[in-house]
Amino acid sequence: MKNGHPHIPEFGKKFDLRSVDPAETNGYSKEEAEAEIAGLRIRINDLQDRLYADERYAMLVVIQGIDTAGKDSTINSVFQEVGPIGLQVASFKVPTPEELAHDYLWRYKKQLPERGHIKIFNRSYYESVLVERVKKIAPKDVWQRRYQDINEFEDYLVRNGTVVMKFFMVISKEEQRERLQERIDNPRKQWKFRLGDLDDRKLWDEYIEAFDDAIEHCNTKTAPWHVVPANKKWYRDIVVARALVEKLESLDLRYPPGDPAVLGLKVE
Amino acid sequence: MKNGHPHIPEFGKKFDLRSVDPAETNGYSKEEAEAEIAGLRIRINDLQDRLYADERYAMLVVIQGIDTAGKDSTINSVFQEVGPIGLQVASFKVPTPEELAHDYLWRYKKQLPERGHIKIFNRSYYESVLVERVKKIAPKDVWQRRYQDINEFEDYLVRNGTVVMKFFMVISKEEQRERLQERIDNPRKQWKFRLGDLDDRKLWDEYIEAFDDAIEHCNTKTAPWHVVPANKKWYRDIVVARALVEKLESLDLRYPPGDPAVLGLKVE
Image 1 (spheres, each protein chain N blue to C red):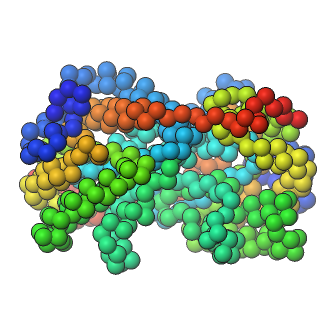
Image 2: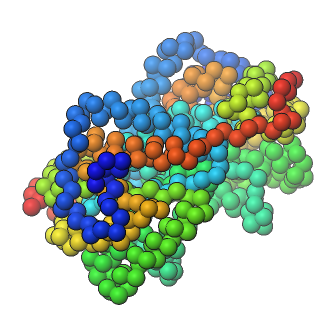
Image 3: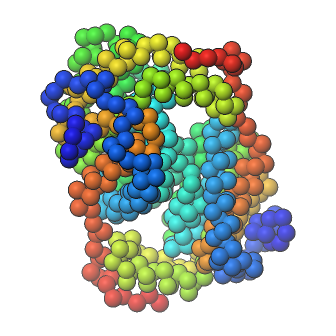
């Protein structure tokens, strides 16, 4: 995972999350990162404005990671300068009876972004090969077939103008311990803590195995995974922000020209 | 419109938009306003976080105003610090055939906020007594009955935990002329300009009359109208932001206490 895209795993290769250092900072200091993120946030806002005006593309941003990996805080930080008119977040929780009565991708397809908009999936259809596998909600022959479904779905989206950006947040087990402990000890954060979070923590190794397979099987040129070291929030944020800026810049977004009948008109 | 709420018209009284000075700044300088708005934005973000944790209330923010009155830019400015997880915007355009096949409030009810969230209606059900009246889409006996529908609807929302905040942006006809001219002359803004905007401008007086009646008939203690002088963007923003802060503070929002079984727990 070096050069051009230091955080995209090699395509078609076995992937091992243990090879990623969650505390990696690529030589950055906190001060350097914070100076850079300020400019990246403004650039993302400018590019989102062009995306909106240009109206050719939508952007889907998928954010995954184990509990406390910082999904919410990444969203709030990276998109801080972007106004809410062209930016939406869909947070997926336990499926409702209506959602369960449909195929497993149905509830995600309902929430896809319209052209000109950025939609963030805070958790996503990847849960169907993660929590559903680890908690044995879906049997192996069912979840194993889903990698191909997901690849086909993402390929379909990209061919139809929805850019798909996927970020997997990596924290260490010790970092998760500290963050869970903080939720218990800080009265402003207690409401976020569920006892079930500790059950999930006991399944750490099973989750890692599911993450490895999901990243390996669904890391495609069309919609690559960005595996983001996330112990240091300031490094995490520049990795995500820079990937978004690079992608948006590659789309050559333009403000459409005005109606020729309008040019030079004087308003009375 | 003085004291406590300088921008809420007197309830049950005839209302005349011409009595509002669109360039009013209440003695503020631009510098003072910009210093104050920075703090208000941070306070709104803090209160939104509590609203989300507290989970008892939703907040609906209705923004109305004539073309170029600054609806989008108010949203982007006032909510600049609020992350997208608990904040959504619904922008209402020409109704779709599916929407037209339902009662006129249907498409707005579908977009109401869930508890813990702030939802901004960028234009709203008020269009049913504004553009539909001015453009003669609805006959007089139809739109006249709608004020009562709307009052009953808002009363129902408030009794059921959705706080309703309504802002009407007032600009002068000369200010609109300058802003439309800017859209024509600035290549980055031309795509926003439609020739139809000039037809609407010709109906200025008819719109003012419709605004007067909508504000007069739907200005209730439950859901008052804030009539916001909006020629000066910096004054407009503090009027809106301050009203939101006051309302959110009045709700006594709290972080729910943690599960007693969790207090003092050590994570392993």
